[in-house]
Length: 254
Image (cartoon, rainbow, N blue to C red):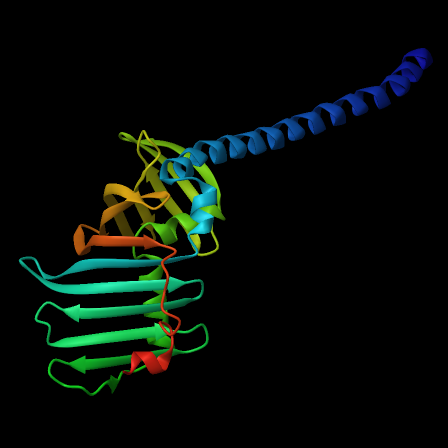
């Protein structure tokens, strides 16, 4: 009996060591599997960057100018048409708009420090100041960040992608951004066709070359089953030569 007891005491440390080793090994394997899956997802989403022109080309597109017509739904059978030109240079941006009647032109500009906004009725040479508070700036930033695919691409390029399988004919990814999680869908070529941000759904079509990049010239935004607006782009310029005073508030008021 004593011999058996001594044997058990001798074997016990070995058994405990083996249990700890296997437990640690299993935890390590799970963590490694998670890391490998994340790397695989990032590699899969890398195809999307390549399809649009590549990470380097996206990074080089620090400034751009976009012209579009926005059709905004007001009732099931009615919409408002507005012509928009958006200029972006780093943190600076300027949006010029004109309604379909041509009666009122608006210009809104953020120079990196403050917002300035004016309107000019048709046939009037006077510029009238518009509200330029934080609420208007937040709304404008939101518009700038979703005006065309390029800002989406720039955000995705600095984020983590997690593959979530397929949804019909599209590959589905969860993109963890500093603005929250996005769901992004890409086609067989890697082109982004759909982005879900909270309750908003953005759809992209009619891809064309814009400098080094391949970008869509149609964008639709829906909430639930309802279409909110459609953007039809006529021009997308990457790194254009802006006039020196383009983002100057004095120029805005001339």
